[in-house]
Structures are given as C-alpha cells and as structure tokens.
Length: 241
Ligand code: 5RP
Image (cartoon, rainbow, N blue to C red; front, side, top):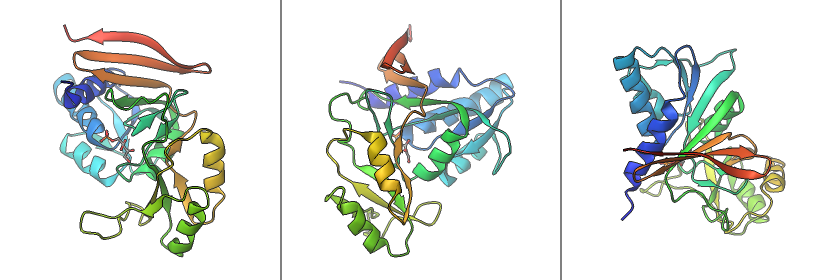
C-alpha cells in the first residue's frame, strides 16, 4: 500500500535541496510543507544554511520559528524560491490551493517569487478530473451571503467553509472561504477571471502559470516535472537507494 506520509516527505526533502544560502525563501502551508520546514530547519542547524523566509500562514510562521529559520514579515526584495504544497495539479501545471485556507498569502508569496516549486504526494496530479477538489475562494465577511449567491451563479454547489464545531472558518486575514464543488474545471484562466470580477472576492485558489516545477513524492523517491508551454514534462526521477 502507498505510504503517503513518506511520499510527502520525499517530495519536500528533494525540493529543499534547491534552497541555498543567501536565498529569500517562501515557505508554504500544509502537511507536505511541514516536512519542508523541518528539513530546512535541519539544514540551518546542521549545515549552517543561511536563509531568510517569508511564511504563507501564521501556522507556518510558528513552525519556521520553532525550527530556527529567520522570518521576514515584509520585504522590498523579490523572493528567490517558494516551495509549497497543492490540493490538485492539472495537466498544464495549474494548481488548486487553499485546502488549508491559506490561499491569499500563498498566492501573494508565489506571485512575488522568481520560481515556485510544488511538493505533492502521488494523489495530487490530476489529468482528467482537474477540479474534483473543491475550489477555495477567499471572500470578505461583509455581505458574504450575497457574494455566495453570486458565486452560485457559476457553481451551484458552493458553501462557506465551517470548522468541525460548525463555526465559520476565518482565515489569517480575517476573511471567509467559499468552497466551490465544480467537479471539473475546463478553462481555469477564464474561471479565475470570472470569479475575480465578483465584488467581495479577494482571491481565488487557482494558480495559473505560476508553478515552475512539481516534485511528486513516491514511496521510494521523487519524480520531478518541469512545467513547459506544452504541459508537464518529466525531468528527473530519484530513488532513495
Ligand atoms: C493550504 C494549501 C496547501 O498547500 C494544500 O492544502 C496542500 O496541503 P497538504 O500538503 O496538507 O496536502 O493550499 O492553503
């Protein structure tokens, strides 16, 4: 049986090799990014790696701090490399992000990076059913009931995200998330534009043309794909042994 935790770790550890001293690094959010931050922290402690980091969520910031990574809250500088997880990766390297609710900061950080690498386990690359993961959309609380009605004109199956206790989930930015169960997304660029035209929508969890490489962890290594104009092309395959 596939070991998804091992796959996440393998993807994260391989991607972390691309982090070099002197870099300003964007750190992602989620259970795969957890392994990335642990590995970068290990390299800071054991190898004297010297980096500064911008974090995509408060949770990541806490973890990075615990792991001895220097954190910047704001900067004029462009980020050298951002490494982050994803909920789904489509054929042309388009991502669905925001399953953990951090999509706004994740997009700001990725957009302001020279390169963005994505770390995923083998369940995330989806060639035929891109959009089967519900698309997160961050919206402001003001008049959110109307905003949801407007989103439902595009996808009927849209609901405000709630916590396990039934309370509305609030993002690090004080906003709400609407999850759109599209089933399938055929034109992500057009969809992103249509959603962003709705007042109240802050950001959409579709990352079009942003990722440069995908690290897909396997049970015993990692596949690395480069995103090109023709789609996802396999670049390298690594094995543990
Ligand atoms: C958080 C995200 C995460 O990157 C995404 O949800 C993947 O998380 P995980 O690595 O836990 O599967 O977009 O907003």
